Length: 530
Image (cartoon, rainbow, N blue to C red; front, side, top):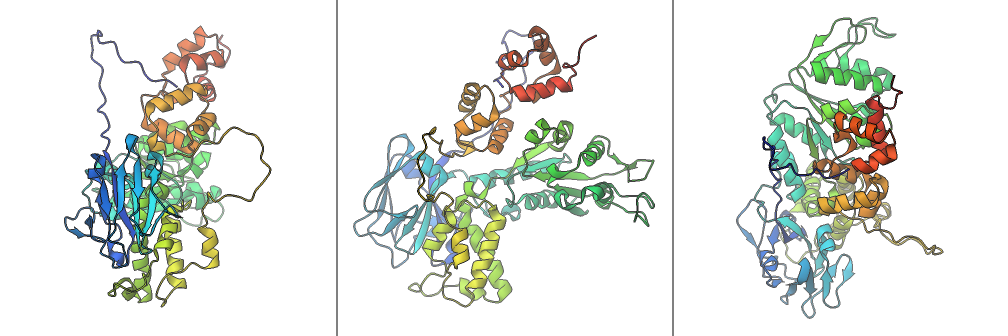
């Protein structure tokens, strides 16, 4: 893989220039994730003074917190908070020094502060949970200074930069007819995004159908999707319509598209290319008008390399791609999401009054220590898991003054990074600290790829990210060429000049040898020439 060289300015025809992606300014912010008045969860204060090099004080009476998209707010105003402020002091290179006031009770990332503590940019990028006075929880993190959107637009709860980007992409693509591929981890809310696209499209009055391909037996997948004629197979006692025809004129959402059998992939590709389908047992095609949305948590590029997914189908499905951030990358939204899910569950139980706290001196229904556990947990099951945990907390603590974890939930929410029992130490290469893919620059990515000879596994390890995140990074940086982005002419020319030696070709083209071998095979260059 390599970065494309800039076009020669002396060429007769000027190259088409890509508009640079607008990157939001990251400003430190404090977001409420725990407060005795639950309706305040999600309020925040932008630390613009801190970004400008000035100290900020946080206490009972200052500063004023507001909900994104609203103008009015107020101080934390909890009577148990100290008037002696927690001072946030700017340090070089974007670091922040926490300096608690004398006698103030402050816990940072689960550890009590006995004195000043300096936070690195990496810690701030991941979010630092602060507990004040045993009552109030604040997440110190980076936010978009220009964000002024409601935290529940498009039916998605949250005000983080990641979810704002998702909303922007929905707004950009909803009115179009292009297919959309929604990529993200399990439980991250991909179907919610698909429904938002449909509901804000010209097809909103037409059907929206959802099919989980992982739940459809391989033998029945073709009939389920494309229909079947009577007598086409044993048990087909009448014509079967299929979801494509049922969604005609509307939107069809294919979840877990990476689990589609090979024969179904071929049929999906035909529908996308021609707008025609063949029901099982039919001899004539049927025209359909369906907006196709697909979702996956699989790494389709890896499946293509392994021969389990067809590259042309990925290119057709990915007419437009939306990446859904995992919950651990939007921790500032966890308080809002918890409140949203808790309100739903309490309304269902007829106990919504538990959310309305009138006594400022009462024990908080959501203890700050529990809220901090929720914010610091990595949520491998993402929003779906948070919803389930919230439901269990509400049901288990029905009619109790405050929420408590039972032993089972205690084990589930145990920090995944908690130290394991001591074991003999074996000398090994120091582990790379896990990082956010969004913090990795294009230049750093290219350097790591070169150092690892464009082998993706060691590159991902070197950068401290999952291989899945590395694929996403490559998609977000189109200037970094991959084997799939090389032209057939360039590969053929290099193949001839290197006499078919893949190692030499990979070094010259700066791409993955494995991916290049697949392209060479696709182009038929591996076959003896007559």
